[in-house]
Length: 64
Picture 1: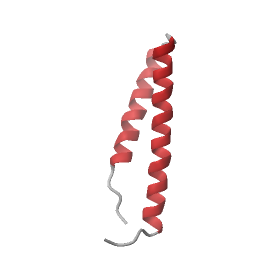
Picture 2 (picture 1 turned 60 degrees about the vertical axis):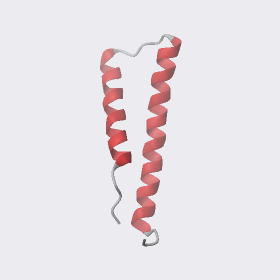
Picture 3 (picture 1 turned 135 degrees about the vertical axis):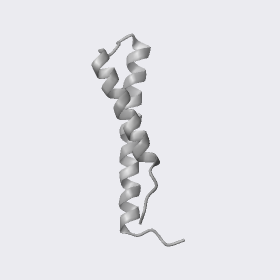
């Protein structure tokens, strides 16, 4: 196994940033549901689409 180089370190930081965004969006959705503040359908649809995209990006394999 090769030691991590600059490109894998950047990819790791990008994944950490994407994961933080996913957690933030998830927390927003959870807060809305638990407090009875329901998002409009178009925002909920956008939120779900973004979470699915973030999940796919986070799970992508990193190539160095």
